[in-house]
Length: 370
Image (cartoon, rainbow, N blue to C red):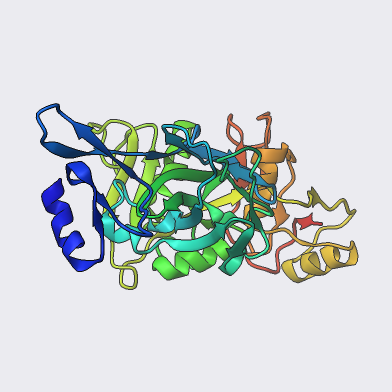
């Protein structure tokens, strides 16, 4: 250990204490050194560290859109310190669509700064500006509070505490409670490249689903035999009942994966994810039915807007919307939501029934969003 200190001793004006211990004026890296004599006159320097620990009791947190959520992060020292130490905390974020498992070192360079704080000073960045703060409910509490949660806030958050040369961190995954639904173009199946799929989901008040979200939907019963883009650029589809044309009858149930595909050249459908909506989706009661143009105007006249597909799925899955009446939606499709399956309302399981994209002059009811 002393040999490691010699270059430093030679480079600065230092005082060599008895036993070979060096005192370096004004130097403090968060550790302390202690002279231990072994009784034979040969002094040795032992590294007696003050260890910085950064921990989280929850490595995964789920929340609903529009709500507030707390990502827990706490730090402490071993041994405990009797006087406060000057620390800096940095929260950063790896968006869900950039996460691969395991996370590569290169992925860490894609982390986006969320907030930095030292003492009473803090600063937030980008879309998090004004929406984040530190909880500070107790000494060492650096938990991040995010308000007004947005669909694209999901991902992996890193809490990094820096004390001098010490730097420790912990990650917390943020998931959104919601629903995954398959989506395809008005032109038919397999018309979206990756960026088109992203935009299609966004147009329907949703985002491209992550692998974890699609896997959870599969566990809950989603079975769909058409491949779709996911947020990480892979193409997959969920199968509960193996069958010919869907990977074959000999494959076990699960997610069928085509792996990564060229995001511009290849075309598939999309798996979208929608979370809780703030408003209400409702079927507009009217004595007459509408063509698409009339349906759009009817919702406006009722003080609302024609509902989007993501809004209907969220209202069906998270709010129990149940209506056995086909109605126009904003993308020109006709659908209706069934929570309690019954005769004359489609298949014998809950779901959003889909009539496709009929000619816009045909007449149906309409679902509005307020």
